[in-house]
Image (cartoon, rainbow, N blue to C red; front, side, top):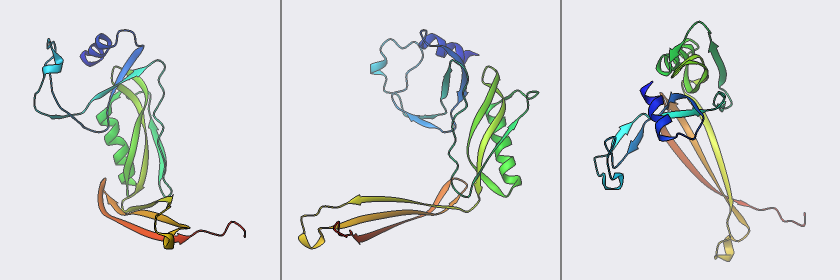
Length: 181
């Protein structure tokens, strides 16, 4: 409750109805103690924190992207009013039961301050592979390369437990089709 009260005190004009932990840590520099008279002069050490996010107005669950080869699922139980960490563990266990790993998750329906009655999540194979392609037209000064396109393919070869194992970058020159054809 104190985190919600702090948020309401800092943002009195906002319709903050609840709070939820972030799913990632952030590095914060210039740490100040609460009530510091001149926050601009705070020069404390950098710290890693897990911030809370303020939820405003009617609750809306976060949208989750579901890459090809992965699956979306949810667990909702109105009789369970659990904190963020427990729902995170529940989603991860559901993915593990399918021999997959949880890629992302979001809370469902608040039932108290920083308490929720469900979780939605995306499970991916433990050795999930995906490729991202970025194409850019290149207009070089070298006339021999004019009319070519640079295609950069970044391929994530393997992701295990949210750690990138290998990153491969391919650079290809592709001749552009003649527009008259």
